Structure formats: structure tokens, C-alpha cells
Image 1 (tube, rainbow, N blue to C red):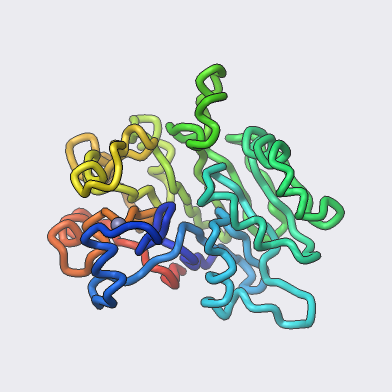
Image 2: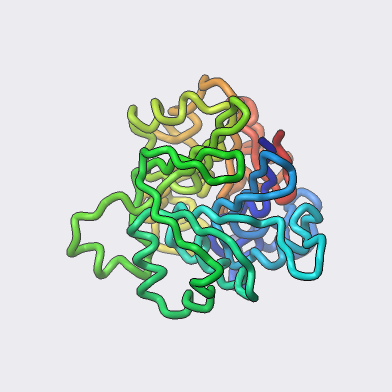
Length: 295
Ligand SMILES: [Zn+2]
């Protein structure tokens, strides 16, 4: 199983179009320590020819152009055979619209996310005769037909911001998911959003050979202190990296490679050589970058 990081930043990317925070400023100025990053997405293959995308961000078109493995080999072809949706956030689904143009593919998603696609007519741009939407039951393993077995895992989280008004009235809490992918005896878990690393989450993640995990914020109030938002990470459904309840402490010592991705542009661990980068590396974590390949 080979994983290719198409995008490693959280929603908005790095730099973000309307953000003048210190880090975005460095990225915009071309500072080599602040490598720009597109919005989150990971491509996975077992046979090296057919790829499964986890997440479809608005940057998907650029990501396809940036990665030769995503290039067509004949006049109408794509190595992308399927997409797994783990969140209905804009940075998780908007890229589906890039995948129109008469391409056969399968979209795997849990019912709540499929419902959101159905309610938004713009996604009808994906011709139902060619794009099959497959409902995935969380916790139940499914053969993707690509040599990869998919299991969706429910994660503590929140519904997308644009859907919050309705969510308040419903008891539907499982709004965000992780994808567990198994192939050739190896397991990868891709978890771009997790609101809290509970004991149950620790247990769920423990068996993976490879973990891509929510690295949105380094500290919970980081966006407030940067003057770019009034929201804490907790409010956005993302556990922070640092602190006693942070993911770094709660996932420390787990076997396998652990890689932070879905990183917000205010997170100082984005900066090569920063103390925060050193801290996560010291704890055994890596920080993803666009184009990173993990075999
Ligand atoms: Zn910024």
C-alpha cells in the first residue's frame, strides 16, 4: 500500500487567500521554512495503477496536476478509481466537482454525507450513470475492488459549519469519520478531524501501521491569539496537538508511523525549524507536506 499526500493543510490552505497572519506572510514571501500546502487529501494505491482518494478538497485539480501519478495515460482516463468521503466540510467534498467530465468512478461515504450531497443539487454535475455513490456502514469492512479494504470509523467531531443550524435539532453526533484502509497485511488510518482523543479513540488507532492524524491547531486558542478568528479548536471539532489532553500526549508511544496533516495555517509546527516542529518530532510524529509519499 502506497500513500501519497496530495494536500496537507486544513481548510483554507497555506497560505490562505485572505489571511495575513505571520505564518501565511512567510509562506507568501517564499520563505523556504514555510512551504506552501494545499487543502487536505491523501491518495492510496495497492496496485500502483488505480488510486483511491480520501477526501476531495477544492484544490484537487491542482493536486492532480502536481502529481504525475494522477495523470491520465490515454485520451479519457484517470488513475483515480474511487473517492472516500470522511467529512462533509467544504475542504472534504468540494473537490468532487473537479471530478466531473464524464469519468467513471465510485464515491464511498456514510449515509449522512451522502444525504448532504443529495441535498446540494450542484453535485448532480457528477453523472449518476457514471459516478456510483456507495453507502458505507461505519465499522463494517468493505471491499473497494481496488485491493484495499475500507472501514469507516466514527470519530468525535462536529457537523460542517454550514450545517450547524440543522444539526442542533438532531441528535446526530457522528458527523466526522476516519478511513481505515487495509491491504497486503498493512493498515493505514486517515483521520483529518477528531475533536477529542478519548480512550476509545486511542484503542481504535492503536493497531495502525500508519496514521495520518488531525494536526489542525498546535494550541486550542491559537487562532484567537493570531487575531484571525474567535474560535477555539474545540469549537471547530479539532483536538489540539499540545497539552495534557492534546493528541501528541494522548497518542505518544503508539507503534507505527504517526503523521500530522490537515494543518491550519496558524499552526507553528508548519514552520521548518520551529520549536513546535521539534516538539512533535521529539514525540515521534512527522509533519506532512504536499507530495509526501509513504510506502
Ligand atoms: Zn494565516
